Image (cartoon, rainbow, N blue to C red):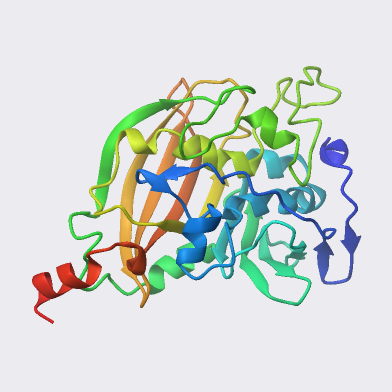
Length: 319
């Protein structure tokens, strides 16, 4: 049934499925994050040492969808999972290619990678369907994390359930707010891999679910849609970026203009020389209360973007 999902030209080798070179579009120039422009704004990004506004990580998930659909068919849309560690930023105009290594016989999970023309790795991770045996890329990373030492920006954030369950929905022409100042229809006009499943097709011959479904890259938008209504007690203003992200469909796909609810939990805090990170697990339920999808997201805040970081560090830790 999923054979007609995409018309993407896929190259198959003995080891992998390889998608075409694409130039993803940057749609977050007007994003407002923590009451100021974000890493996707040219001026803000350049202050932090980037060439310009970066393309949001989950934009890249769309290029893996045709590969997953070819390998696993309809199961990809119902129980597919992408788990990725973002390795380098991508700018509009750069070409990137999705590569999915074929799984071992009997396995339902495999390695994925995205690269630029010069070989730079944009992301690496795993893709799978169902209850894949073995840890996903991010489950493995979580198990290896060093706890966040001497937090400044995240000093008031605690591991555990966070906030109230929120009602969420994504209609075609709904502006998704300050974090995502565009609509699903606007995204579909520029998405790297479009599908009749995403459009208004409402008959079973072109769509197994009889209703348009939300692309995996836009699930990130849906799940984060109301996060600023119940913000983490992080210090700011500061600039954050997605460093790791996993989206798992449990009972998918998720449908356009359908009511869902999301609840969030802080599952880990970690850090690096340049960042402080909060790992948030979002669980999404349908109107019957059934778990339909989850997202694990590492939101890394750049220490250099928080003005009083050094002074507050000395005040807190006497160094």
